Amino acid sequence: MNLSDLQHPAITLSSELDGFRVEIDAKGERADIVLNRPPFNVISMLQREQLRITFEALDANDAVRVIVLRSEGDHFSSGGNIKGFLEATPEHVAKLAWNIAAPARCSKPVIAANRGYCFGVGFEISLACDFRLVTPTTLYALPEQKLGQIPGSGGSARLQKMVGITRTKDIVMRSRRILGQQAYEWGVATALVPDAELEQATDQLVDELRSFSPLAQRTAKKLLNDTEDSPLTVAIELEGHCYSRLRSSEDFREGVEAFHDKRAPKFVGL
Image (cartoon, rainbow, N blue to C red; front, side, top):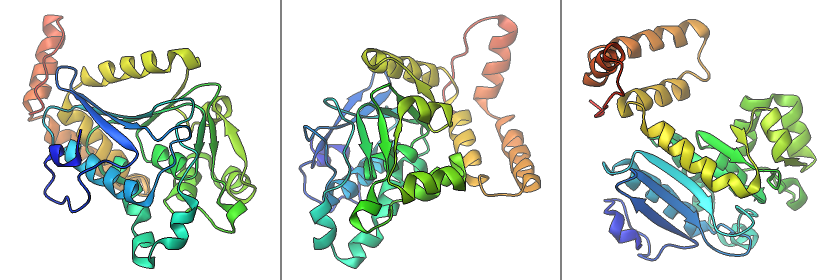
């Protein structure tokens, strides 16, 4: 697939996708963004911008309910193109965090399927996803200290929200690698599955998410993102407003009727 096929109005980049491809399964209501620059799927500067545009385009695509970010080969991504940082302008570097936060801004559920190396920007974009599936081979790391740098695309900030300042300092300031098992135990990963079952687990999660109301899922994701830093009273107040709005939706009526009829609901997203 070419970038132009996604029909995004903000496309000003090359029509060729740099280091990844997009697969859309309209019947399965699923889109896969597949990193495919073997063997380590290094993420270039151009690729970061294209990934952001791709997430925005898929968010606007009515045929897609769930987005999966995955890779070819034994490793998700060993990180960014190190030399590219020296060549990039300050203005370009300033956009890095915004580009990598695209999965979080996307209104649809985003799953990261991580195996093997998941370093630097590979870890950061996974942290911006809603669900992270890992295997015993998964290695998470933010190794920027070894380059005389710090994470620059939201990695340390997102990680600190998940695991606290003590563990984050241990990971960031020592460039420590965290195994999939530990990531799961610390709450960084949603699930730990055998390496050979990662694709199957991803498929199952996609189908599970598709079974819910698209409107309710969009609402839940935005509410949780928006209230992450809010005082409890504000979060409860916003939750109440969202709940009230959903009560007038067709999906809520369908859900209630399906519950009483003892049948599977047929949600339409309205």
